[in-house]
Image (cartoon, rainbow, N blue to C red; front, side, top):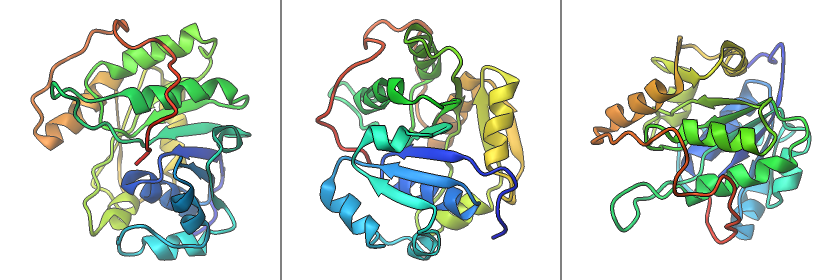
Amino acid sequence: MDTHPDPRTIAVFGAGYIGLVTGACLAELGHRVVVRDIVPAKVEALGRGEVPFHEPGLGELILRNAGRLTFTLDPVAALAGAEVAYVCVDTPPGPAGDADLSRVWSVVNELKTAPALKAVVVKSTVPVGTGDRIREALDRAGLAHVGYASNPEFTAEGKAVADFLGPDRIVVGTFEAATADLVAGLHQGVDGPVVRMDVRSAELTKLAALGVDVTVTPPTPRHEPPFVSNRDFQES
């Protein structure tokens, strides 16, 4: 694939299915990508070009883009120079059936160490209203200059690489046009239309695609603290 005309430095949090596909495809588009995970064996294997699951074409992308796709355990190293941080961690159901966002908040907590950050992009599946809460948390942490985007994934196992590089749509939900422009620009070279909307609409679009019964959360954080320290989680 041709080199991206405006390559960015990107951190991807979570070396699971969505994180690896996202990181490898962004590197294929020409961006410099660092994928962070907390499992040493996984990071070491990925550094050798070994993919922990089967996805057609993914291993080839990782090997072909080894010069601009790296893996690390260190969140500070991942964020050093990063202009965009993708959140691709798992949000499993909790005891009450609600999405457990502790892994998302753990990533948000790390963003304070990112001196060059321009935008946070969430691909994790989250309840409607989560973006409002993260936006307010970023503001309180002195990161009001950092944009926020919901960029849900609609990839299917077995053709995730093809779905990322040739989607029927790229959903980008933001609070302001500049962030939408930035995220849309990251996808230059992807064969698919960018559909812009507000953050809640993007979150709803993903849940509707999953057939989830949607419960809208309030825009003001009430339960999680704006930043939490939770090291004992697995990004996936």
